[in-house]
Length: 162
Image (cartoon, rainbow, N blue to C red; front, side, top):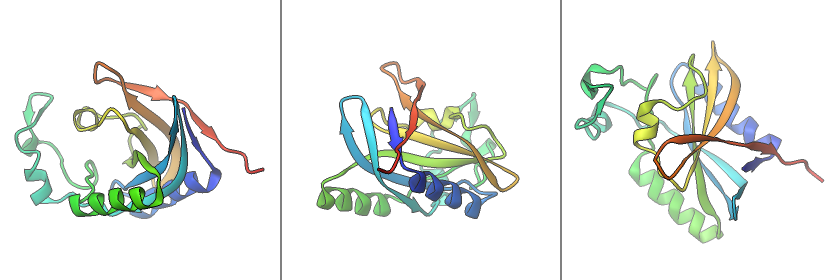
């Protein structure tokens, strides 16, 4: 289970709508207590996907097609620049929180992970995907990898401010 407050989810939705029709992405800071993750902060990042970063994935074959044959623009792919990820990891350590997840959007596509998403996911993270249809954020789902490297849906709970 992953717990967000309303403002955290709104940050994701706003970033997704502002970057439409391209995929947005970002990092989620929080705490882990057994099987419960609690979000502390949502940090939108720039989608760094370009020809150069696409080349980093050039050895990959998804659906038995070379990656060069796949529509790999920012409309269908995202990556967070390594330098930005290192800065975020340092910031998390300094603040005594963890990076507990990554979020991104699927423009005009359901909030379910693609095979590409699965191929590059890490087991310890939650992967929040928001569907953006015609510029409007809609469904949002969280996914985690199981021991067989398959995505399983994770419950999202909204924290109620007291």
